[in-house]
Length: 339
Image (tube, rainbow, N blue to C red; front, top):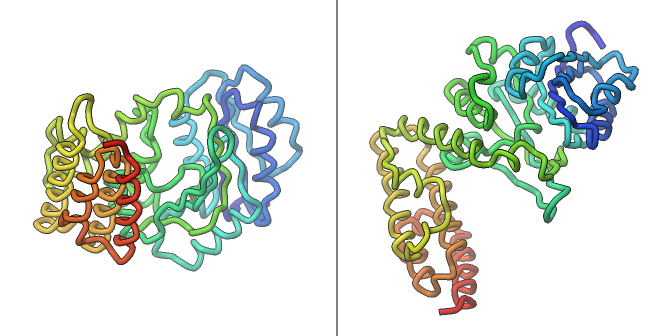
């Protein structure tokens, strides 16, 4: 490894001994070798520090905290300490596929306009294993972030030069959803995207930060989305906040009334973008249609009235060819529901 490696891998570890060895080895065994591996041991009280020290690999740079500082501060410092052209994120419980770095470096080297890229990933651990095919078109991803994070944090690689140029780093004042908040600021300065290949295995377990702090994570996500909506000159009411962030009716709210309100809200976003074009029209149409399809599909318990809402809505018209296939699936789901 040179003093200026191609990649700086930044990872924070806190009481991760159950998963840490597999994670570290998945990084060290990458087909692409020119990297430094910055591991911030955040005052772990289990065997994490011993596991890290057991590796005799010059690429590892161990930063051992005497006091727990939290993920965001560790990532902030890790970015500042990094010496690589690219910075790759990793979490202490996930698994890199062997060619992850090779594929991402190749992509970033050949797409100089892209400032940050993630990848598709496959979940494992608790629950059913699924492949998350997050958006790959930068304009689609940008619009999709109105509703979803759209990039998995431990799959990310970004250009350090652009982070320095635009003074970008993790916000240490927030405890959760730090990735979504950071990506939303990146969008102001450069395109971001995902590589359409599964290059990481994403572990789902009850001890993860999201599982343990769902409400706090959601609260920050709501604030991020609210800021993005403000760029469309939309000031959300409390009722609109719920419509934007939930896929199911409130308790005792009739399904059809909920979908009518959702249709009105989504139409409001489309109209706002016509007046103040923040997003490419085709990309926003695609995202709004997908949201509408998801809402109707998840509320098929409302029966045939839900299908009629979906099919005869102006939001159906902005869908692409597969909207008819979507319609047939929602029709069948509605038929199978109890009236």
